[in-house]
Image (cartoon, rainbow over all chains, first blue to last red):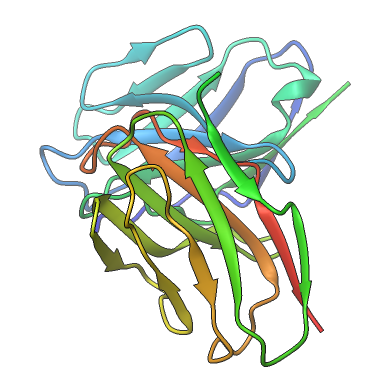
Length: 108
Length: 114
């Protein structure tokens, strides 16, 4: 399974863009990158996914480098409700394997 | 509304007793999963099932057992062989295995063994 590396924690001011990095240097050519987040004591929630093109939806944007070895999740205007643990995942053998994630704290 | 129901939300058991956690989904999803989460840690996969009457071990299957007799149900039994069973358990389902999109998680069961 391709592994991912994320910083353990980040802070961001409310209203600013939150940029969460992820390294996945062993990713294979046909493996997607998925982002989920987990708000305290709830089940994870899907955010976005991508293969090699940048993606955007109503929640976030995903920027994948040309060599696909890293990506950045962007929350354009972070709110207090975006405080959560964010997981960057490369699908492994038919199922999601969660790492430690990044604990993002949005400060007022 | 479609979703996943886990019950109970909190569960207390004495050491040495087996306990079964319930997970039911009405999303018509083929694949179902059980994850364990310890305080401050990420989710670890216990078992998963891609189709009825079939399931595979995840990364930490020792001391756990599952069954998948119906598409809607994927109960997890925590046996007395599990050395440290106190944890938060999350059940999930997805339309099919092999994709990371469309995972739906339950609200979890917090198991405490005393």
